[in-house]
Image (tube, rainbow, N blue to C red; front, top):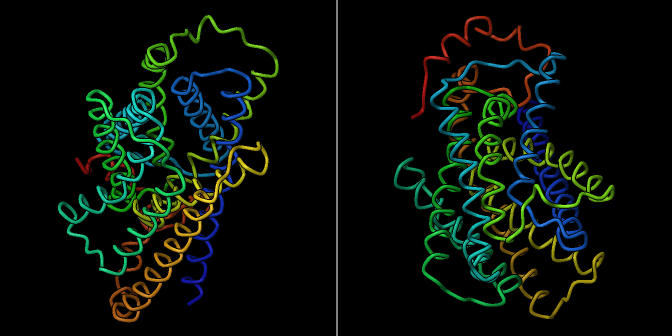
Length: 348
């Protein structure tokens, strides 16, 4: 029971960190882009990932976690896929209306459920599906204002949905199958994500904004907000991998819509954004859907734990994976020999 309580506290901590850091970076980036006129979102994301890698590299040098060897083919594919998904999401926003972009984000949950059901044979109960539908309806009411369709934008949105779903499913699958922590996976994949965005980011941003990131006049306040955004991004990237590893891609998307509701609320409170009765109704419906999802997941997990407790105690040592590898990693079973073994494994 003590280990289960510790795990639940870890999940709560990961969820809180994800929400707090994500809402913070949205507010920071909104001030940077809307108020200060820095529109280069894709390039900024590449800087986020480079700072994240540098931070993790320093942490690894200080023995705050142990870097495990992972099959290079798997890491490269995973890193490039996640980088490409970010580019497609930004292009989708650029070529579509805000309303259609929000629809794209909403479509990620049902598409993830579909992929996990078909390829991973994961079962979702009718109660879970109902709560997700309730959530999506609420977020749609709160955030979708207009729907304007065009062929290029629709194709980009479809590519964004596919790459995002596959990337998040792989985030969970790689951690479990290769027995690596969220920190270790992020450490290995961040350079590849940063590299593809570092190369493509200026081109994507110039296509969307008709401006060059290299010709932009960087004032001290803009540089200060960029540094702040990059530092917050370390927490965002880390918590993203942590939440998906501890829970599931669908739960992470549900959490993402909670962030959307919070951002709408903070935008009205702090930035005085327009806020209507429709926004309030949508947020209330969405929060109720999140509550249902959380309740049904908790009930199903309790049933599963009560039925699988004897089996879980037998395989616990094999299936448990460190979420934050610390200084005591060397005392774990097989630690000295695991890197060589992992370097030959691949989930692709």
